[in-house]
Structures are given as structure tokens and as C-alpha cells.
Amino acid sequence: MAFIQDTTAKVKANPLSTLAGGVAGFLIAKRLIKTTNNYYLVGAVIVGALGGAMISASMKTSKSATIKASVTA
Image (cartoon, rainbow, N blue to C red):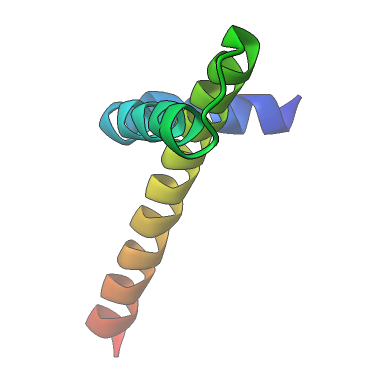
């Protein structure tokens, strides 16, 4: 349950990167994989959106850790 809450919080905190990840997932499924099945397209959009949110959240935390380390040093 904590995983779902954590993932939902990351998606809500990073709406632009979630949208960009969904578009990237769609384009990858449509152009590179060349799928015509709508279920695969929806799955690719969902995976891309979650991936975009996760990557953006991890970049924010690593960036803030670097800033905190340089301020305290």
C-alpha cells in the first residue's frame, strides 16, 4: 500500500514530467515497436508516465542532496 501512495505522490508532484513520459511511451510504442493493439498503447502510455514521474522525482532528490552537501561542507 505504501508503494501505491508513494507512486501517486510522485505523479501528483511532477505533472509535466508525467505527461512527457506518457507522450514518450506512446511515441515509442507507435513508432519504434509499431504496435496497433490499443491495449499495448495504453500500457505503454501508463508505463511511460510512471517512468517519467519516477525519473523526475529521483532527479529532484539527487539534486537537493547535492545542494545540501555543498551548503554544509
